[in-house]
Length: 295
Image (cartoon, rainbow, N blue to C red; front, side):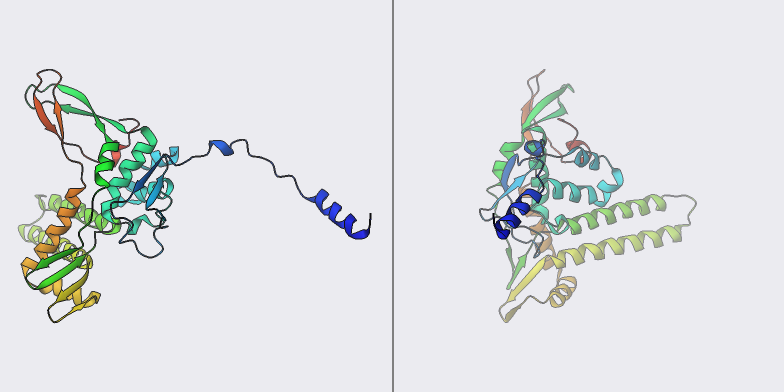
């Protein structure tokens, strides 16, 4: 054996043996694949690992993920939702800028991946007051939402507005401000405060929340087209929305609410097991109990 062959043989002997992980076949695998209501649009650059076929893998929750939904402070701030979506839908790189129309859809998909497509809901009959359990088919709802198409354009008079959905960050910010306002209302009810102090606190809180709401809605407008031209300048758009007539603001606000409403859970038509009365059973998506094991 010459010197070169000896070196090759020595290298082969020196290479460490890779130890096979006996747990490799038991790591999480995608349970479902879904198409997003947004179709992957409205995500900031770098916030979504775009799928070539429009479908995104959804994994079941880990024990850590389930615990996140039991942490009140993390739920309030939105951080728990962000962490669980990162874990279960890894293609969503930054859930904070995720369009709000994808939020509930993905949470339902995560629940299906974790517990299955059936969700048990308790409801009282409005006629006989008997409480019964009903099964809701979540996979059916996912299929229905799959046909949703977001309408970006609305018209008001001579103007055309191009709008995007709220981001999850914007939605969470509004919710937190609303809770803060509620705290102010509770303070206003304090008999220890003078009437002047109550009025001052109420007015300050109301102005802050109103300003925030208007700013967020203005941020959702990405372009305005007029007979004289168009603009995508954020400062020009924000100034217009915040100072223009009420009809323009209402058109944008109502459109955003309409798009959100179209993909929300609709009440389920059920029949009472006792008196056979038929009624509409509302379904709410509350992370604190929606992800209770096999609820």
